[in-house]
Image 1 (spheres, one colour):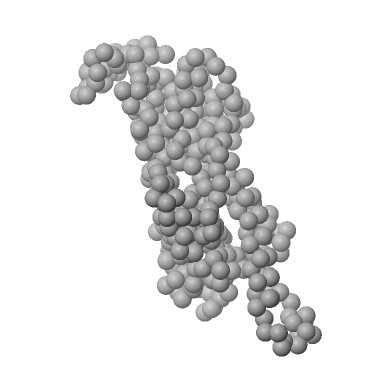
Image 2 (cartoon, rainbow, N blue to C red):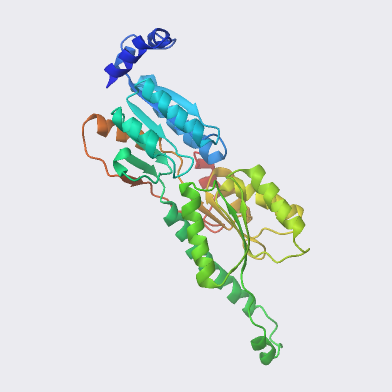
Length: 351
């Protein structure tokens, strides 16, 4: 495979410069022996994404036998498609793609297949007619993450309701207590990048729970996986709502959305508190999210592991050796609550 890249260098105007020795390159490992990887990253929209990129850059270095061609798509699928086509022209050995959304990939991945360049999907996956268009998907099971979150939320809401009932004054007339029907749970939903695997999985779990449990979905807002957008969306929603609108749960599809939502809620006079205030659910469990979880401002932080570089490199080594690969490889993940987070855990968190 490395021979293809050397041939491409001779055929391109910039090829000779690319094939020339680079500063810091070991003379014992000529460039033609390196495995050339073209990588298209979504962008740098969140703490999770930055940690994911850093994990990749740490692994795919020349000292480990790789030459990495890295492209930042800046949140645009057309940029990713253009990058893939450029990688095909450069005749890289492997393409690593973090797809911004699931659909729209059939044509360009078919081009990569015809060029005999294996495509490795990292983080999110794609919807294509032929799964043979990619070699392997490495990432999180987002549907499981969402189901884990709503299962925890159902149980926690029941516990909090029971605690509130037990705290009622004993002199309350029983008939009055029976006549007061419980109000439906009021939920605000901040979605991630629409059409992405993470958004689809996490959204589906909540929407099913809303239907089954009779919760009231006050709003579905487009948080875009960023703090700034989530803050603006939440602030606008609160400004347009009657003062003091009850909000029981804010379901944020990543940590950065939770940071923005908490800021907007607190500015509007809401208290984000796992025990007595707004229940904030978040995904990723980055270090700052765990700090807010320890404070009680985030009630549930569902883990989404961004450190996928080593698993991606392992998949390439298996492909190099001609070993079979499982089509979907999911990382193990858990969740954290104010009761399970400790200062030591936060200090040891690598991202």
